[in-house]
Length: 69
Image 1 (tube, rainbow, N blue to C red):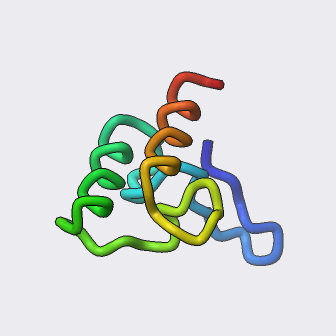
Image 2 (cartoon, helix red, strand yellow):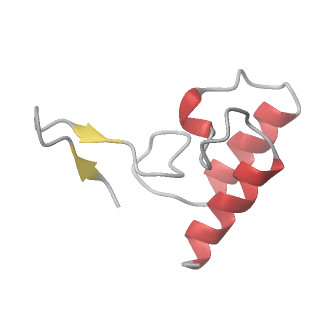
């Protein structure tokens, strides 16, 4: 789900939408895996659980979002 910024009407990335394509899916999980392995630069939006690091916990958070948990 994409939410809207109430101050400017600009779309905000959905939580878990790491690659910014508007959906949370396996591609986002793959992007986080690439970041964990150092194949892609980690971004702030990839820190899905907000703990300050991009790691397996973020990957699990995205999987939970996909599964609706």
